Image (cartoon, rainbow, N blue to C red):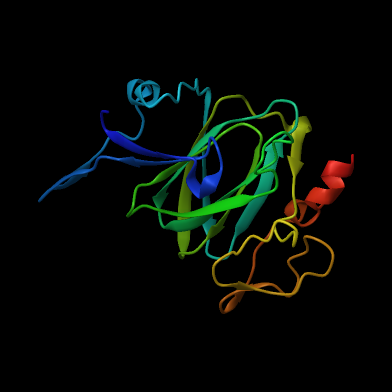
Length: 201
């Protein structure tokens, strides 16, 4: 294979892949290919990406868990400054790992990327003072099609590093903290239902 190594089915979840690029370092700094369609095809990950997104967030921000209902998106996610704990939750109804999650530390230092297939919810927690997060999508964003799952759903049981709090029946961030500071969750992300409520619909 070319400039990447690929670990498939990370966390025992089929389709979820951890990708590590080859980094060429010398006294000047480093160089790496952040994406190569040829390498992806060689790894049997033939996905046509159509949109790139980027966000910057401060420490303690938790974004997610997001997905699109009809216009599902595969995502290739990475961090270009700082560090985040990145999480994918399998929402594929026919999957043997439905409802299971996997998390990875993604940082500007380790250069790792997570390939999240269609049919997953996604979110991340910022662990450094700031973090810049980039991701490719294989379908366009449709705001009317957006869905979400409670980031603290006890049935999923995500272990967010450094986060403490008591679940009170909703995705509210009230009383939740990342170490020494309140957790920062958007108003929208505090209203997502639990997985059981989504499944019942």
